[in-house]
Image (cartoon, rainbow, N blue to C red):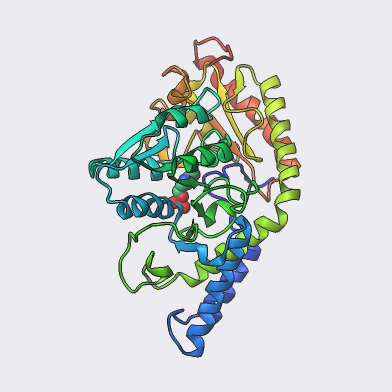
Length: 393
Ligand code: PLP
């Protein structure tokens, strides 16, 4: 019997066996506390520093510019709150976008309660922030701009170089949530004028519960977690050595395999988009057609918006794991997606989308099977709907 098909890599990616074995080795042999001065401690310190170098190489920065955290969410919190605290919070202005992950939006809401002013920039129907909107939103007191590198639901890639340049010309710091983008598209901090960049291991075939924040040398930022002063005093706590080793290994694999892997994933992605939009009545692509992550497809199904969860469960029954949007918002199932509303969808159409995200271990054979399974699953739901299958926003 054919195995299950996992097409939900934007939610989390299965751990690469090479990462798992590096972590097992570390758990077995590197048990010391990296702050201890004896040999066992020094061994653990060396493992952490090796991983720091591997993560730094992924985004072309200095190892000393990487701070390890416990998640992408924590990296985002540290970037925003850490910079805001260093600027005094009250009265500062922060600019972000309406389509950011809750890790950014909720942190902005928290800072707004502490009297920071927050502007959330709109996006176009393709999910892209217009740099001219950023230019218009800047104020003398704007200290920080935070725009994600690529969106977790629709997969669109933002115009980062332009956005970062505008922020810098104004004298504001620029942060990007690159949790979905890191390890999937090239990110070069020597070329991109970014001050802070968040990433998370479990999105790049690494372990859950470990992330990193790039902080450009000289950036004024304070800690979120206070204690023994680890991670340059910005993230106190005894380091999660095995998790950090896993992130380092995952970063190195992503860096060395990215070019070839992207060609493969873009080929599968574009084939999926063209076959599904041609063969499944009412199916249309959501987001930008080309400025999208290599393995990321977000589909609308005209007339089936309210049935997105049923479709997801039908696919699950047929052995395929996909998502009806962001895993983080699964508990809001059935409600219109605020992200699709922000992209100009009406509330009915904003109720459903199908997110199909491919990764390292997916094969052409799995794609073939999916292309047979999806039309059948959609057809099984069609008679229950009355809306016409017209594919437009
Ligand atoms: N930012 C984005 C864009 C994400 O997609 C996610 C997770 O889905 C996060 C942040 C949070 O990362 P983590 O799950 O490591 O906390």
